[in-house]
Image (cartoon, rainbow, N blue to C red; front, side, top):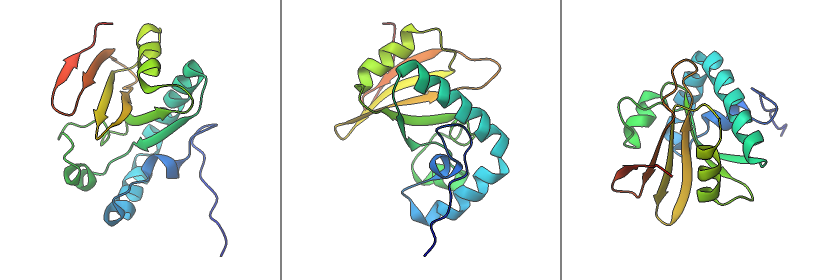
Length: 151
């Protein structure tokens, strides 16, 4: 069986990586949704490259693009930036998630929203980039409540 080549969106991020989901019943829909929004995905991959460069380490993308059906199934907000191809949930490799969050927060990196999230003993960073008007809003979320982060 021949392995399919990944479709690169940027130096380190592929189309397949950004549209993947553990919810197999939505995999095909999510891939089609990503193809319809390929230009936004390329812009988002470029943004993820800047995050990767800033942190100086690879990033694991655990969630990025969500078609509306997938977003609803996972309980995502109806205005989720994942549906707009503007957000990813990331885990830095070799850097603690809280340390990465603080480094991004203290940097000059333009992002729209960044959330240090925790659930089930796992941590990740939700980070989004709109491309025109970025709020640079930082929050923490403990599985129950969002709190504005002020350093």
